[in-house]
Length: 198
Ligand SMILES: Nc1nc2c(ncn2[C@@H]2O[C@H](COP(=O)(O)OP(=O)(O)OP(=O)(O)O)[C@@H](O)[C@H]2O)c(=O)[nH]1
Image (cartoon, rainbow, N blue to C red; front, side):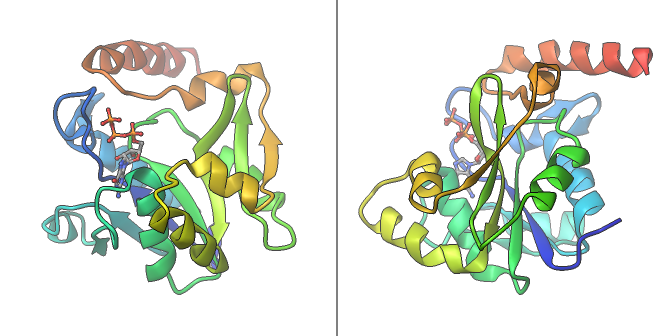
């Protein structure tokens, strides 16, 4: 089932300082990380947008690419850009560095939407701000935060009184993210072990 009232944006820019090269291009289990995110996005919505600085991704994946409306503002700038481009009321935000994420997590966020508040996943380690659901109308508040250089997604979520959806400890693995090169091998190992188990 895909959700027609929501678009899915893959927030794929940034400096990848800790990783050392553009994270979205890194191979995870034989495919670039961005492809895993695209596959997940395609399971949620027919409308996918990539928020990245490489326009050539448009041809490579046959998907629209938008460059950050205000460059250099981190993932919150990516979310703002997506909200300004979509035509649907709702937006699923997907990172490129969490290759173990599952669509069920996003469907759970969708079920919990209400009163135009953002919805965010919370794992046993805290708020997972890149696993979230927003409305187009949230762009105004985000833009004002960015203009005053408040770039923390958690601040935007708090100001918009986000609905928090808790996922118990057995879900923690799905929120594992890749910051450093060595995280790739660690998560690949987990992914393969889970594949064999299922
Ligand atoms: N469009 C866009 N995406 C970003 C930006 N900064 C980070 N991202 C994305 O947001 C997600 C989380 O990225 P982070 O790990 O916080 O930042 P990063 O720049 O990738 O890595 P570091 O430089 O090591 O912090 C990833 O999917 C990044 O591709 C940005 O300025 N613009």
